[in-house]
Structure formats: C-alpha cells, structure tokens
Image (cartoon, rainbow, N blue to C red; front, side):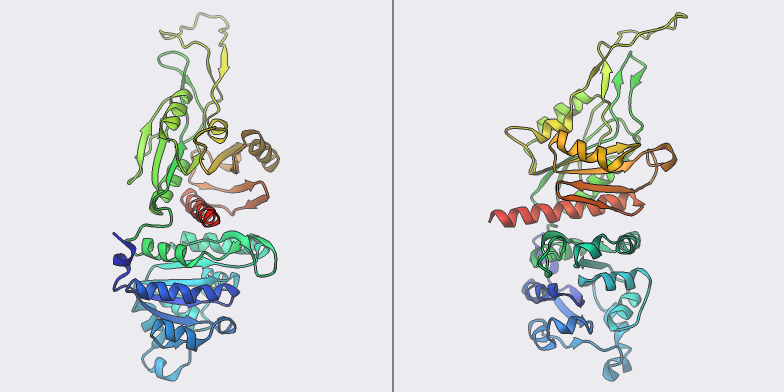
Amino acid sequence: MARSESLRGKRVLLIIGGGIAAYKCLEAIRRLREAGARVRVIVTRAGLEFVTPLSLATLSGEKVHTDLFDLTDEVEIGHIRLARDTDLVVVAPATANLIAKMANGIADDLATTALLATDKPVLIAPAMNTRMWEHPATRRNLARLLADGVATVGPGDGPLAEGEFGIGRMAEPEEILAAIAAALGGGAGTLHGKKILVTSGPTHEAIDPVRYLANRSSGKQGHAVASALAGLGAEVVLISGPVSLADPPGVKTVHVESAQEMLAACEAEIPADAAVCAAAVADWRAEKAAGQKLKKEGKKTALSLVENPDILATLSRHKRHRPALVIGFAAETEKLIENARAKLKQKRCDWIVANDVSPSRGVMGGDDNRVHLVFAGGDEAWPLMSKEEVAARLAQRIASHLTAKRKAAE
C-alpha cells in the first residue's frame, strides 16, 4: 500500500513540545496534509517559543490548541474530544520533560492531559541534548513508555542545537511520516526496501550422533530483533540455530545446526544493507565427529577441538558485499565494556550490543535484558527492559542510522 493511500482520511493529533526541532513539524504537517490526512495540533507553552499558532493553523487548516482552560473548548470537554477523536497521537519533539510526564502520568497542561486521556496509539519522536538522552532518568522513563506500548521514531546522530554532535537529534519529517504510516497499519515503514540479515540462537556442534557442543542461548533476543525489524518494513532473513521458538511472522527463516552451516547461509544471503549477529555461535567444534555414539569405557576420553569460523568478523571484513552496518553481540561475565570494545576493534564491526550474562543475571534463556550499545565514539547504557523492548529500540537505531547514511550520500 502506498503511503499516501494509507494516510488518506486518517486523523492525526500532533502534540508539539518545546524544542528547537519543533520547526520540523511544519514540514511534517504539510506532508501529512498532502497525503490526505487530517492534522490537529496541540502546542505546549514551551513549544510556542519555537513555532507560532498562525503558521501551524495555516498549514493544518485547523484551529491550534494551546490552553487547557480554553472556555469554548472545555464546554465540550475539549481535551477528551481531542484525545479520542483521532487515529494516532504523535508527540514531536518529545522532550525529556514531556517523556518524564508521560511516563509518570502527570497531566498539568492540555498536551499531557490529552495524552493521559487518549485510548489511541501514541508515537513519540524524542529530541534533546545527548546528555539528557543518556541520563538514567530519561532511560527509565523511555523504558516505561515502551513497556506501555508507546512507539518511537529516532532520535538520530548528528549536530545538535548547542553546537554539539551526538545522539538526540529528532527524526526528519520523512522518517516521522513513515513511522506514522507504519503505526496506522499501512505504509512502507522506515526500513522499507532494506534487506537485513539476523542470526539467532545457539549452534550445535556434533561430537557424535547424540551429543554436541553448544552455548546456553534461547534465541529470544535474536528472534525479537528480527520481528522488530520486520515491523519497520525491512526484508528480514533470520538465520536460526536450533531453538524452541516459532518462526517470526513476516520473516524469511533459514534453519541451521552448526556454525559452518550458519556462515554458509549468511554468505548465501548477502549482499544486505545490515547484519545483526545475535547468535551465540559455539567457538569450537570437534575436529572429527564420531560416526557412532561414543561409549564410556571407564577411562578418560580426549576430545580434540578446532575453532569455528568467525561469522561476525567474516561479514565485517567481506571484500565484496560488506553490509553498510554490521552489529555484533557480546555476552560477557566480566569487564563488560572493556571486552566489548576489544571485540568491536578485533571484529571490525560497527556496533556491539554487550550484556552481562553472569548466572545471577538470568539473561540466558530469560525474558529481560540489560545491554550497553558500544560504538567507535562511545557507548550507551540501556535500562533493564524486556528483550522485545531492547529489540524495538535497536531496530529504531538501525533505521535512523541507515536513513542518515542514505541522506548523507544524496
């Protein structure tokens, strides 16, 4: 379905927060109107410092709402009508302050009251200084919103208003429109036209016909990443080791057993725009697997091991078809950031998603994860989230990165 068709006749309530990125909302409104959507606007008091009601009303063709105690509106319980008479609520820019209020159910102005009163889907486009984005309070608040089902688009990397450079730049109007179309159940999604390879689960390295070497991986995180990427419109190929999980809908899944089979399947699927190597690949395999079951004979048995191929390094160093973005996972029990950064350099990948898998953490096979995203310029500590929430955030970061890369090349 074309995006214009998916947005035609849809009702969007746009809540504009107080940030310099508010100017992007003018272009977003224009494009939404061109696509046939009806746009009504609420602007916070801080938002009025950056955009004017006149410009917003001119572009939207609707009255702009600013005051909770507007007598004309409140006779009709205006904030309830605005919150319910819509198909989607979009908050852009979603400042740290707005995110905090949303996460904690605070309703002290028209914008936050409408957000608390709505029963419609909500999409936020965060925008703030990098330090504010990385602050533990913001991470906790965002994790709560994700758990509540709030969708996000961005932020991306780039120059910020303060003259700094980093994460916190609001998504561009084109990205926001794609996210709106996806949230409304149509449109291409922010990763439409991108092919992404994901590996997941353990590998089983045969010792004999009934025994094998493996890692303690359920595949939950890798499968969640594949689902999240597909939800953003990507063509996803999931190369899965042996797991007890169902194949994600809308994803091409290739089932393998060993590391050698997984590498062959990956190479058969490139070129690709990105690769997410979430599989817990066994580092070693038996030099020669026995043809029959080995029997205990009351004496020590020597098992000769050889190293398995390094899938992450192979994709990162591929001469002809290296993906534009290669992401590895690092499961560590000590020196998390130090080991992850060493792996980033050694494998020559772009990002490492690092997590502490000490037995006390309950990550291996569990439903939650606490990760660090490590990259050449630094790292981000993400709060404790479900593996689905980690996947959703990672998918959005991938989408923002690939979009920025495309725009830079244009």
